[in-house]
Every structure is written in C-alpha cells, then in structure tokens.
Image (cartoon, rainbow, N blue to C red; front, top):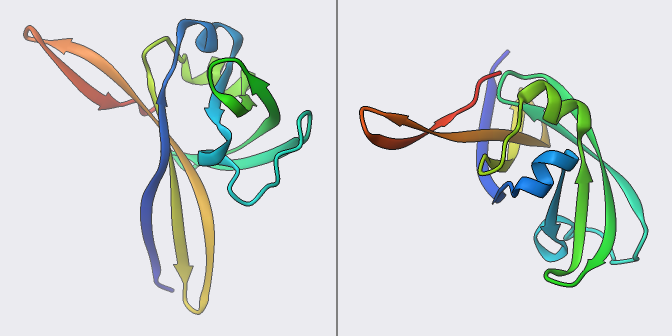
Length: 129
C-alpha cells in the first residue's frame, strides 16, 4: 500500500523563557484556530504527531492577551518535559495531507529546532528526541 505525504508549514514560534518554564505556548488566534469562532475561555484538543511519529494531544484555550490580542494558549507539560524544551527553541507546526490508497486526511506534525554552536558557527538542527 502506498503512503504519500505532502506538507506545508502552518505556523512557527520561538519559545520565550516564560513559555518554556510554564510548559505552554501562546499563539495568535488568527493563525491557529481558523476553523473556530473566538469565544474566550473555550477549550479544545489539538492532536499532533512529532518527528518520530509519536502521537500527542495538547489542550488549547482561547483567551485575550495584552500583546497578542485574541490568542490561543496551548498546554503541553508532558511534551515539554519529554522533549526538554528550552527558551529560544523553535516550534514548527506542519499541516500534512496524508494518503494511503484512496483515503486521505490532514495531520498536524510538530517539529522542534534548536540552535547549537559548532566550530564557532550557530546552526539550527531538528531535535529528534
């Protein structure tokens, strides 16, 4: 059975120190929840798969923020701990269209990139943990 994937970056964000410490991330509502109507306090589940193929379920809440306006806070304590997320890590959410035979579905994939210094040069590499 053939398995084809096509993907596109949906949104990305570099973690702040506060987000890394609180095991959550704040994202602008317009980017994340295009299929939801904004209702402050509304909670939803966001299913994703990491680079290793492990499935994760994050809790999202719609809220107002002084800097971002309408936003989504995504809580992911187990994910953050297991991946060892740090301030300045880049979190990338990809929307993938997966196909197997005649069936197709959309899947959210979450990737983490971290800057490392190698021979005096800063390079970004995907964290495969």
